[in-house]
Length: 84
Image (cartoon, rainbow, N blue to C red; front, side, top):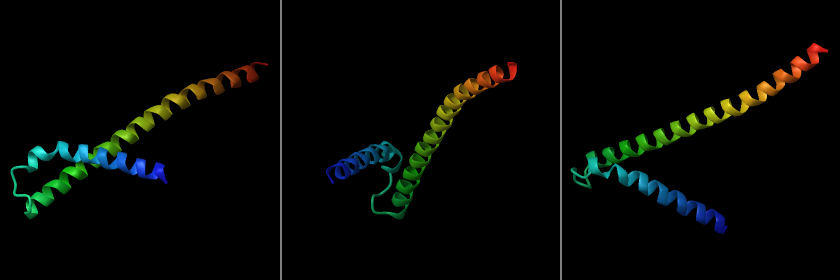
């Protein structure tokens, strides 16, 4: 239970930092207007999409690197077997 609370707090703090980094563009608008809410939603959406894209990109690079090493091992084993 404590781990869940701790994880939740870390996520909340992380998203607050991400959301607050885009405050500069939305600060010129009144806080209770619909334009301000749209601006905040748009900036939050952009941040979450970019974080997701980076995660996918890093995962693909890691898999490509790891799997290419394993593939080389399998090719060497295959060559040894076919040479005999």
